[in-house]
Image (tube, rainbow over all chains, first blue to last red; front, side):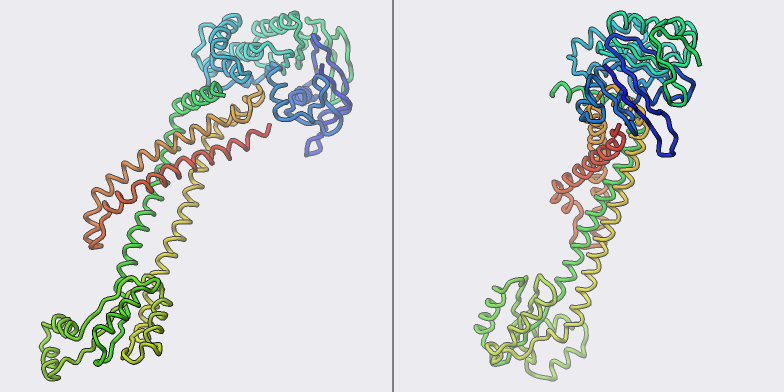
Length: 226
Length: 303
């Protein structure tokens, strides 16, 4: 589904973020990318969504080289990908309901579907009572749950989560990780970038370990070892 | 398509009311800008009137020999009137000339006595000619009148005596026009930059939001649309305010301007140019609002 071939990323100030990174993620897999802060996890995630371009090497999404995709094709990939970030990346001027409704509108879903499905997913995620609140009126955990709801509402093929539990307490961390596991059990591909040892060790799924921009370990049932 | 447009419109209206401070600032700046452009149009109207008044005062006079018959002079008058760029040709007979002289100097006994002393009417019949063009047109008329076909009845044409004065007047009016044009261009550029920067501040506050919209796969127009519609709303509201303020301003100030510039009515100028004014105010407001939003958002779409 996703393939990195000898990817290297060097920023304009000559900082090398990724070096000769190659791996493949199959459909329905749950892959965790671990590493210390600055190991290159976020850059790697951004490359899947075309938010960063490799300096060398290729990134493929469903067999297509990401750098060859047109704007329209890139938009389609982003719509088919649910993304969750440490800083939530919510739309601050829109309410909880509107944040979810917006991505459904982007997908071109009709009004009646938006009106029926958006409240449903917000109920599942535990935000039914906060439909008209703005993100700044929510706690960190609620904001992250909203980000997850937004990522899921269009039934994406793949979920990409970049440090989704970075700002959460243990209880909310457990909730978000459980959600990701459920999504994976439903057959969706999940890519989770984190430096949370406890999460990784509990998951018992495939782990790719990055250090100084290089893959130093790729294990089918890995543990957090740095 | 229609569904998307409705959604974009709804987003724009929501954002407009939710960001009241930014919306008010953008409308205020646009209003001031459009008022400056409107002021410039009023200034143009007044300066055009002044210039035309001054130009109307300029004429050249062709004096005819005593022997020239009225029929011949009127024939020449018709020929001159038929030339391109001629605004007015007025025939002044010998008798009219003496009456004009007497009327002009009725309070000065010296002139009246001098006229009596001469005994007969010393004035020559003449044609006063006003052109609508520049000095070259006066020169052209003068050359025609002094050509061989008219030389037997034309005594003299005072073009060369008045040439310096005409040149000075035309130079002043031309400078007024150039000054107005340069001032206008500078003002419009400054105004556009001020509006652009205000809208840039408004869009800058949504920079993160635009990036998020792109990350979730929103198309260029889905992101850009609400900002552009907000630009239209800013421009439209600013236009409504400006047209009302302009009308009130014209109503109260017109009589004062008429005192300074007799014959010029700001109300008449306003009403006769109302549609042009509406088009300029609305067009300028909306165009600047839309173009600024378009350009500023474009910068953040490259994700």
